[in-house]
Length: 130
Image (tube, rainbow, N blue to C red; front, side):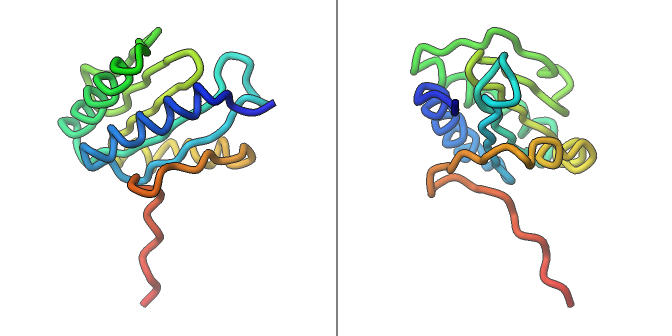
């Protein structure tokens, strides 16, 4: 089984919304084989607390246009790591320090990735060796 078309649609819409607020390092995983509670994870990074909150608000606005409402929202007040649970999709918007420290992409690296639209900022390549 893989992520539903609806889950992929939400991931794409959320990724575009996050990109509109200059989120970086976006990455999506199909976790449907490993978790019974959701189909996909979307990870996005903001440079500071204010940007994290702006990214989250834009995602919520765009997904609301698709009649999707979060079941649960955690961490918005602190703006360091916000989790939005839409049932089919769980979105993690993290401050760059939290993203580096928790490295969720390492935890889910065995899961297939979901291709994001070309206009979305994916993982940033590591700096070139000098």
